[in-house]
Amino acid sequence: MIEIEKNFDLKPGDKKRIIKDAEFIGRRQFTDIYYDTQDYKLTTNDFWLRQRDGKWELKTPAVKRTSIKDTTIDRYHELENDRDIAKELKISFKITLNKALREKTIVPFATITTKRETYQKNEFHLDFDEMDFGYVDFEIELMITNEKEIAEADRKINRFAKRYQLTGNKRGKVIEYLFRKNPKHYRALVKARIL
Image (cartoon, rainbow, N blue to C red; front, top):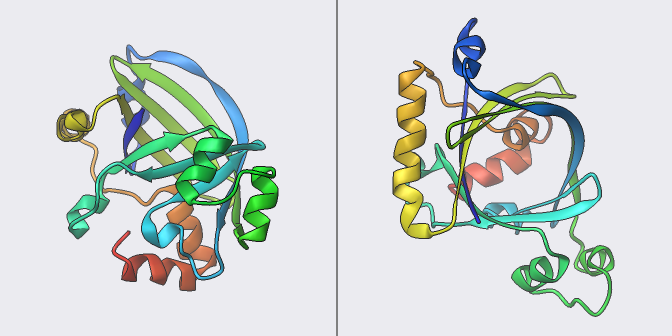
């Protein structure tokens, strides 16, 4: 699956308008621990490795970013199988993924707990998040199966945002966390044109 998502600022009243006629999916809380090498080899290549409540996940770029404009919508393949993750990271899976990552000095760089409220509106997945470091985020997401659908998914998200008069692209939670708490890592991502 390929995840296409974009983050937005919300003004007073936006949420009420957006969720009108949407299906409420639920509320939950989860903790993500994000991993990288000490010199940021994963994230500066747009690889986002995390454990969400103990389960490994890896997001890899579905398309190569060619300009700063490409950073406004995220487009990722999602891997959730330990063997697939190890293969993508080119590390041995003769041992557990946890142990293999430690051997490669791939270590945590951020731990974020999120309270999430989720809705489905037609084909759009809508997440309203509150993070434990004082950040609030709204994300519109589409899941697609084929890279040929990426451009149309981008257009659909932008049309949805325009319909609800959403403005102000917003940093995702991990990027905001780094902006606030680890400026060196944040600058490395800017230099690598990930941001």
